[in-house]
Image (cartoon, rainbow, N blue to C red; front, side, top):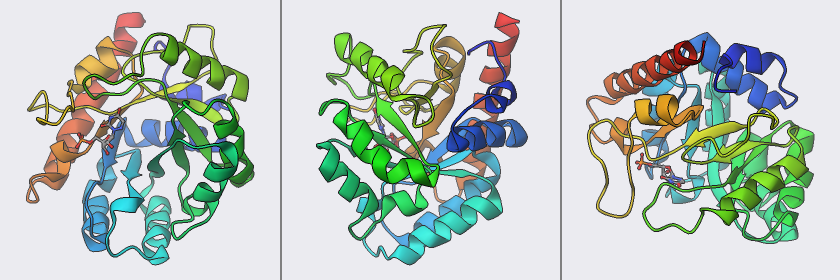
Length: 264
Ligand code: UP6
């Protein structure tokens, strides 16, 4: 899939959220997902409005929001349609199927009702995929699995990563559409999985707390990943949010175009 355009991949994708994401990427010429890891609703919405022209996706950690009400989720969903992006709640579910189904559909956050995409660890085994699917599949949502992580010393490597990919193959592309991973963990003859990659920064290589950053070029061109996730690199300077989003959008898109050329 690294030789194919986002547009051609969108055309044949069986999952409506993945299709929407790939179409948005092509239309807005961006593989940038901004991670809005701030704790006040107004600040989240402010950053989202500023970065919206440059992103295909907005990633949330809804459980860090101090003044959460469901209105925030509804407003994000409205903005997703108005400003043309996909919502990814980075919940990293990690329990048995019955519990994650409830965590995903219920509680105060009701994630399944407003987040197009979410993710899960594979530690519990395939029951986590079917549990989440019971709530998310009928809504046209999508799931990605954590096959690798960006943080130093993490345990998601080798056989663990391979088993995550195998679980995705068995689940079917109409629900599990890809991975959080640092490189192309899938094989050439696999279904059209998305590789979505955090740990991206242009200015620093780490955060002093285990995070490890690579550049958009390293991630998209060298490692063949599809979407770059950038958090603090974009919102840490409050006066440069839109400018930084534009900078990452341009770097990510250039790396994608160079990748297509290399393989043409
Ligand atoms: N994230 C990682 N690494 C992973 C998985 N997820 O950094 O392996 C998430 C973090 C954070 C974002 O939870 O929301 O991606 C990265 O933010 P940053 O760019 O500010 O480091």
